[in-house]
Image (cartoon, rainbow, N blue to C red; front, side):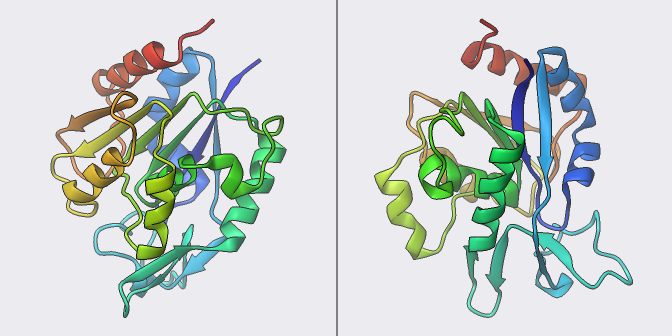
Length: 222
């Protein structure tokens, strides 16, 4: 039976684009028996509201909207996870899960980190529908900053084994944001890893090997 992984893409991407962008990593994980399942956000936003540098993949002339997991209010510097996102992911897990791990990039990693505080509670899933996760990997991930989310992180520290990957040249998700999500995890379960590039998921064999080695430690094949 395949070991399924829930994949959450970044803003202005889609499941299909994220699959393409993670081909190198996906190839290595498939060798371990993992099946990567790429969800696609069911909400849209204006290209004008997409953070600078985060929209290069999709936003071009003629694009009227982009996919997003959250609703943003740039004027107030505010954002929130939409109920429709939680409803969609609830059904996605039922239809495609259960999952052994979760891997997210950028906004998808931020949403994934928030969910990891209490995945089943936030998505209203039973342990039979989704057993406890064995790992969480965040590429350019961040902790939600709005005040209304802070109690959730404080009351439910992320205790799933987690790997936090930061690009040294990433100017979209700043290092302090990556660090904040890292610090929202229990010290004994978190690992930090840097790569020399920018705001993307590294696909080189050398880097993928580091991820594989970490996975083999925290989630060995029984």
